[in-house]
Image 1 (spheres, rainbow, N blue to C red):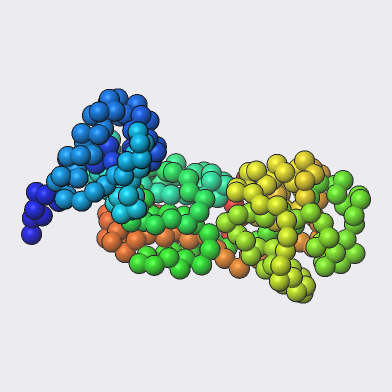
Image 2: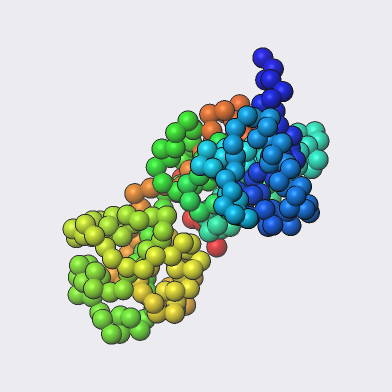
Length: 302
């Protein structure tokens, strides 16, 4: 059933609303869209008249979106992003077969990217677009067909395929142990510990595997393995790093084990896709190809 024209605003009006919400002022929105402030105001007014609702509140010369308009702008942003992605797919690969994939920065670069030349040779008809995402996101609000993420693959309305597990090792710069050598696993709690933002329970799981009850583990927080690795190298604390990521620095002596060896992580790496994309042709070919890359717990490319 076709929607009434009233509920199909112009792209120009929607872009003005999205820019006003994202940038916070008519001046910034006008600059971003190469328009005048009065043009932005006219677009918003036209949108209000078409929808029959108030979208902005004025406080002197300042304007701001109503709470309902903020929510509407977020949904509009997602829709505009989907339109842009669909247009890019058509322009880049008019015969179809594009796949937009969200990847974790370190795992994507170390595990997936070295394998992609094989995928390109076997499926030259598919264009694979990669973007990094560290945190869990909503497929309904992001223009992705699938994602490679770490955890339990418990996202709602999705299906998943396990790629591989992971083992971590507690590492630090040698000078940290020179000053404070642990005599048991529990002594590691007395060292400056560093956390990955997306794995808040990693240290608790590690201590549990060593037989230590540590309900609360304090420390500093980092957003990516690249930054926490550099922090560890510079002696800022002890980091839990995937074994494959720490191997080179351990071999060179730049890092040393703070205690014990590699410990299996409770999660795993998964390919995750929304149920609405389950029968997408490009995604099906990518999944079938990934099956050929995940036999056993093979070592990651070095």
